[in-house]
Length: 343
Ligand code: G3P
Ligand code: MG
Image (tube, rainbow, N blue to C red; front, side, top):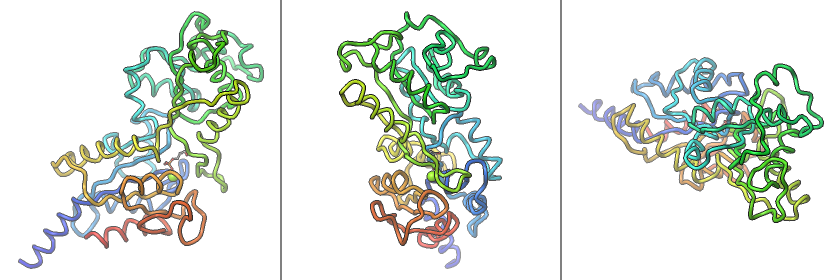
């Protein structure tokens, strides 16, 4: 009976803990698996002494593809199922904006694939930069526009269409073109292409960014610039050209809205796994970027674990945003240490 009790308590504890995983720099580098990532998911999906599933969600600032496509891709890389019901990428909470804006400019993603993401979110009228270039090539003087791009564009007379908001969903694949077009729209009269507002503020359309990371770990040895760097550049240009600061909204880690959204996802994933819709008490965020994963998790009262497989390359702990649960060699070390503490 004692043995049964001990097991019962461990099962209870396992249902009262959960993990929030960052993806890039923790489980994968681009499309390349970090081997400990696969092992960790095997363990949490039931290959553990209790034989039960320990709840975990994925909270990534990654972006650029619909959730279904990204989860399929990750399931293959990680050799473990990744459900859209346990998955939040930077633009996932931006789905809610579809209710407020009709015509939007959507920026980012390979071949402006974010158009697909916006369609999936229910946005009604979606414009991507290539649609504008196809209408007037002089908009982007340095762009070499291919035949394929022309075929895939949907040109219209943008001098007659009010674009109501700008949504940067993912990394720009062409800073020069995207910055030019965003700048044109920010300076225009209520999003009417080809106009310039006299007062830069009162007729300015809003701009949203899906995340603010400066750097992103990739296959390249030194982390690459990410959407935060693009935004800072844009802000500086906007200030220099108009003389005023650009107001903007940023989603993603470490913004509070993203963690609140994560709580909702965590609770409903708990319901799916264990039939109890609630947020477990002991949450562990595992991330590689102190400036997004760790600072956000700390602010939200989660236990934070910093791993050495991504952006962080410092000493004992990060000086500005130290991880509360510690620094680990990799994700496997972090997860086994957390499980040892809780179970
Ligand atoms: O910085 C961009 C993004 O790829 C980072 O993703 O999973 O580390 O939040 P993640
Ligand atoms: Mg990361």
